[in-house]
Image 1 (tube, rainbow, N blue to C red):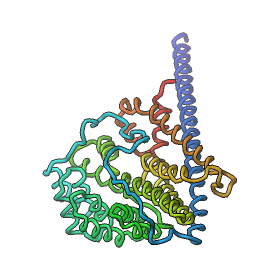
Image 2 (tube, helix red, strand yellow):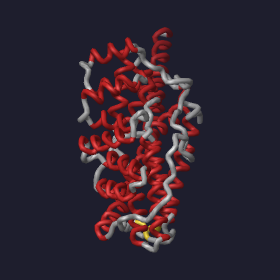
Image 3 (cartoon, rainbow, N blue to C red):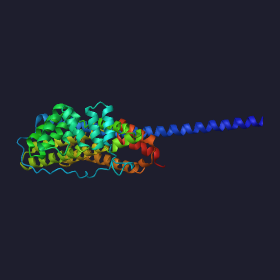
Image 4 (cartoon, helix red, strand yellow):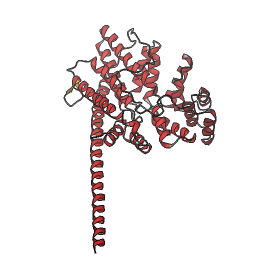
Amino acid sequence: MTTTRLKLGLTTLTVAGVATILVIQHQAQEKLRVENESLRQQITQLKADNASLSDRFARVKRARAPRLPAPPMQVTAATNAPMEDLPSTNLYDRFKDQAPKLTAVQVAAYIKANRTNAASLLAAYRTSGDPARLKEAMEKYPNDPQVAFEAVLDKDLSPEEQRQWLNAFEKSAPDNALANYLSAFNYFNSGQTDRGIQELAAASGKQLDNYTLDREQDDEEAYLSAGYSAAEAERISDSWLMLPQLAQVKQLGRDLIALANAYSQSGDQNSAQASLQMAMNLGQNVASESSSAALLSQLVGMSIETLALNAMSPNSPYGSNGQTVQDQLNQIAQYRTAVNELVQQAEPLLPTISDQDILNYENRRRAFGEAAALQWVVSKYQQK
């Protein structure tokens, strides 16, 4: 009887311990769900406010547009220097010293397994750094929009070749505002301001797609075929996928602000306001770009929007809910501060998470966005 009672006591303690653990796990999961939901609501509200202003600007745009020809303006040459005031998105240290490049043998095996299509050639180019793979894609698939996109960013092209590929990008992706934006940047950079304005007008009402998720997936498959683990492949394809178009887009925003100043100095306030509205629309489109989960895209878009807002009267109305331009500037500043704090909290934690949680983090980033994924890491790993 004593033995039986002892067994029953141990069994009761075991069941109670398991129940306690389950309750704690449930409470932690519920807290994480509430935090993620709160962050998603903040982002949704910001996008809704931006959409409201976009509608307002669209109505105004139908009434007036910048006068052409545009007045002379000083265009600042774009550089490849890091963009200021943006937190780093290279958040954890594995492979931090250099991007692992696939060998020619590894790339050839990957291409063969994928029957040499446009996507496999572009992934081979990005993961190996071999320009011959991009050239092959350009020769074999000149009408593919992603091929045209990669070609446009090729620094080895002559100005004439770059213009040809910009035209090809617009033709193959007529509904993608990014093609118009990159074309407008090229025109502004070459002193053809009027044609740049026409490109921006053509971008009105279009969504922006920079193919980030498609490029990540293709690069991940290339690394997997080379023998990298699933966690390594996802981490590399995320961290080392460059977004060089963002530098050009941000410079385009600066050029629009300079154009607004030139119109204002010439006494054409209507055209100056229309130029600021174009800059605002550009920033909002970049910030809300649906196929990119990167915080960097959101922050670049907000930076462009901030430049436009700072050129406006702070007391002028913003949207249709009674807010002012200054109210929106304050809201953007608060969001950027929150992002900076989130990155600072997550940065030391990311190098410590398990391979399985690297996969979990990447899956959350692609499904819910980078901010929500970082919040998940902080909630799970930060010591209370």
